[in-house]
Length: 306
Image 1: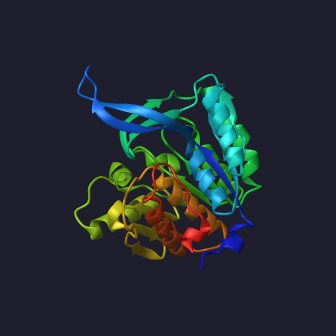
Image 2: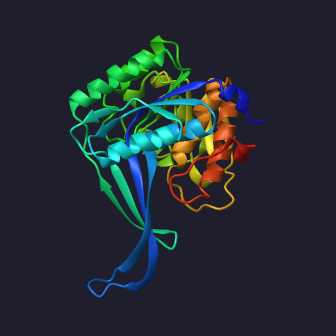
């Protein structure tokens, strides 16, 4: 049974790259006379929380208390992000910078993504320092720390955050990016997808070699658990108890946007509620199977998991 009552008593701190996922929805009925591209007649637009903000949103919807720390610009998307977070029950402790807020804009025609346009700049060093100064005092007030790395720069000092969480005795879960996993040394759990795992350890010939590579990475970086999410192949957990695998549960894959955020959020709340990694993985796998059947950046509700 999904531990909803235990989750309701937990507090999760999310730190990382926040963004707005902006959708323009419309119909496509003709091709442009100017170029061989579809003409989208936009009928409505929608802003959703993205990146680390979507992780926090999922955590709040699942019933835990979520606090979000990230960097935004002094602009309309930054104000929209703060407003959306509040509407979803997320406590936002955002750092303002001179850069624009990261926005991923998707143009949708007949429920299909036709184009994505990204607006982003790396935050200043001063903003990153302010983010760490904002986050560290909050760690002691939470049960679990989640670090959502989208390689936008907010987690340039990620090791400082991991060290602070370990010093406070708090589990820290990381959604990684890039090939340098040394920066996540000492995390409780690191959850790369299949492509990110390739970046970290290179290619593997079979499951036995993957297990060897994963165990070597886990021990080398003093990571308690390594969870590799593998799309249609399910998820594989490597921990001191050994290798555990669950098959994918998706009935129909419609949109994978934000699926990793949902996995990380589900892991965080179930771990905060006291479940072992193996059980937390099972719930995260179930959540992933549901969210990929939804359009765009979406969330999972406890009744869907039940």
